[in-house]
Amino acid sequence: MDQKALEVIKEGDDSTIACQFNPNNVYGMHWYRQYPGEAPAFLLTVTLVNWEKEGHFSASLDKQKKESQFNITKVQLKDAAVYFCVAQDHSNTEVPAACTKAL
Image (cartoon, rainbow, N blue to C red; front, side):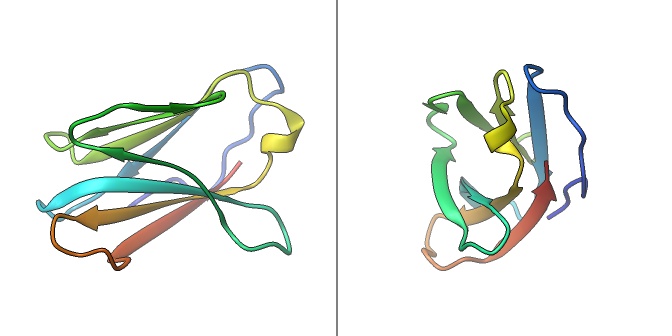
């Protein structure tokens, strides 16, 4: 999995975090946020059959492009954190691969 390491965003701007994956059997992508000194917190899951939105977060999964996009609309100061994407295949509920990005 591949993801740009750091992005600087102004408050009020929109941000998109792209997470590329290589396996062909990816069915879903789980997105997490982690503040310094805290455990990662689950935000949402997106699958091949649905597009997900939760508050000012949304995500999509494109198997053809082998990419999941996580969108933050109107970034707020409280959004400054590390974001994780975790891929899941059809048959495995374990965590097969993950990548991170600081925002």
